[in-house]
Amino acid sequence: MALCSARAQAAGTPIPHGTLELISEKQWIAAGHLFDVALHFELEKGWHVYWVNPGDSGEPPRVTWDLPAGIKAGAIEWPAPRRLGTSTIVNYGYEDAVTLVVPMRAEASLASQKPVQIAANVKVLVCREMCIPGNGQVSLTLPVKLQPPPANAQSTPFFAEARKAWPRPAPASWKFSIAQTNDSFVLTAKLGRKITDATFFPVAESQISNASAQTLVPTAMGFTLTLRKSDQLFKPIARLKGVILLSGDKAYSIDVPIGVPGASGP
Amino acid sequence: MKRSTFYLMLVAMIPMTIILCAATLLLAAVKVGELAPTFAATASDGKTYKLADYHGKYVVLEWHNNGCPYVGKQYNSGNMQKLQKQWTGKGVVWFTILSSAPDKQGFVTASDENSYMAKMHAAPTAALLDPSGEIGHLYDAKTSPQMVVINPQGIVIYDGAIDDKPTTDVADVPGATNYVSLALEQSMSGKPVATPATRPYGCSVKYSDSSH
Image (cartoon, rainbow over all chains, first blue to last red; front, side, top):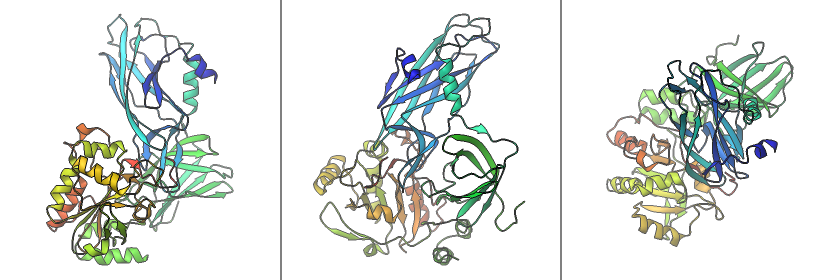
C-alpha cells in the first residue's frame, strides 16, 4: 500500500504484534489553533485492537497524554468498527491496522516559542486467538510559530484516509425509531431506499447481546433490524446510540430514542 | 409468558426483593434469577463433581485460562487464591472451570492443572476439566475470568465480571470492588444482590470454534 511505503521510514514504537506511531497533521503548532494528531496502529496479519465498546471481551486502547501547559487533548475519533469473533463471542474492533485521530487545541495563551513535546502512553490489548497487553510510549516534538500551521505533506493522505473511516452523521432526511419487546430492540430505518445489509454497533456496553445475530428485514424505504437485548441490561434505557454500517462500508452515527413498550409508534 | 420468566417470578418472591423482580421482567434470556443448569465434570483431582450434589451450599464458578492476562492479574496478585481460601473457608464450594479446547490457549491436562494450582497456591474446591466447552456453553461463559455465584437454592445470583476494573493491570486489584464477594456477602446476610449481572470482562473463552 502506498500509505505504508510513504511512512516506512517513520519508526513505530513496538507493541505486541505490531507498532504504534504518533503523527501530526500539521507542520507546527500556533497558539489559538486546533490541530489533529493520530495514533496509528500497524498490526501483524489477523491481530486486532478494540473499539470504544469492545463487545464480549477485550478492552479499548487507553491513552494518557503528557502535554505542555496550553495544549489540550480532545476525545478519540473512533473509526467505524467491524464485528470480529465467532458464533458465541463477538467483539467490535479493527484488524490489521487502525488510525485513531485525536483533536488537540493550542490555547491562545500558549506562550512557548520553543518546540513542544506531545507525548502519550497508550495501554493496548492486542488479540488474535490470544490476547497480549502492551504499553506504547510515543511522542512528537513540534515547533511553535505565530503563523497558522500548514499541513504536513506526508501526513495529509494519511489523515484523509483516517477520516474516511469515521462514521458520518446520518442525513437529516433519514428517520430512525426503536420499538422494544421483552427481549429485543427493533430498529426501524426509513432512508428512502431498500437496504439489504446493515449492522448496528452500540457505543455503550451491555445494551445488546453482541453475539446474537442481528436480524435484518429490508423494507421498501429502508429496513428493520432486530437486536437482542443484553443479559446485563437490568435497567430500562432511553436511547440507543451507536454506529450503523450499511453495505459493509458506509457508516453513520445514530442516537435514537426507544419507544415505551406497548405504546404505539409515531 | 416465557417459562423462564414465570419461574423467575416465583423464585424472586421468596429470597429476592421486589426490585430485582421488577428489573428482571425487562430482561430477555436471563440466567440470573434462574435455576443454575446442572452439570457433572471430571476434575483435575480425578474425581467427578456434580453441581446437584451441592444443593444447600453456595457455589462459585470461575472460568479460567492460565494464559489470559486478565486471569494472570488475579492470580499473580494473589487475589483469586485469597478469594478461594476466604470463601471455601466459609463453606462455599468453588469450582475453577477450564473450558479451553484441546488446541487452544489455556487447555491443560489434569497434571498440568495440578502443578499450576500447587505453584500458584490456588485453593478451589476443584478444577473442572471442560475441554468440550459443554459447561462453558451451558452458562454462556464469554470470558476468563467470568464468575457465577449460585445460592443454596440452586439459583444463579450473580453472573459477570470478577470486579469493576476491566484491565490487566495488577495495580488495579486493591482498589477494585469485587462483585463475587459482594454477592456472597449480601446474599448470606439476607439482602438482595445489588449488582446481579455485569459485563464479564477478560479474554474470550477459547472454545473449539473460537478464532478470537
